[in-house]
Image 1 (cartoon, rainbow, N blue to C red):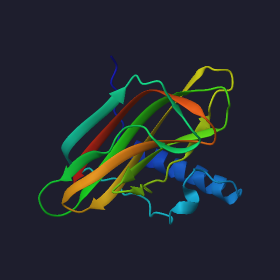
Image 2: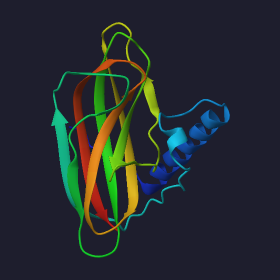
Image 3: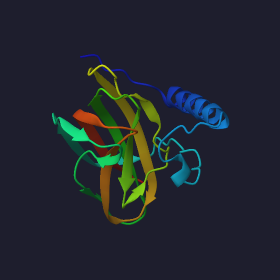
Length: 177
């Protein structure tokens, strides 16, 4: 297995490139994600090497579940704890496979305490295949400034039409601060 590491400069450059692409897409008048109109614009997330990993939860399944259009839960709610005092940052690294015949846009979106995460908001990942084959997508989101205590975390698949949710693996991490 090969492991690749990236410097903070590389990550920052990729983040800025993604922000520029999102800005261009937003300026073209088409939404870049299914919940764009539900969220206020977020300030850019600051990457910090001083964050300390406090807990990790991995949720995965080889499920093959039919999902209707709109937002549908990928898994049940999970409780994650921000320990001690001060704030925490939650990261969700999501990998999902979809299958279908109807096409239409799809996305992976995370909620914390019942609200969609906006660091960044979830983007469309492409179209559900129209020939019954499988497609996969990955995306990471963060929620910063979470207060101490328990927080409910849940990931959703968004489809503009019916599809099948297939294999998924989602890694949630809590960092201090």
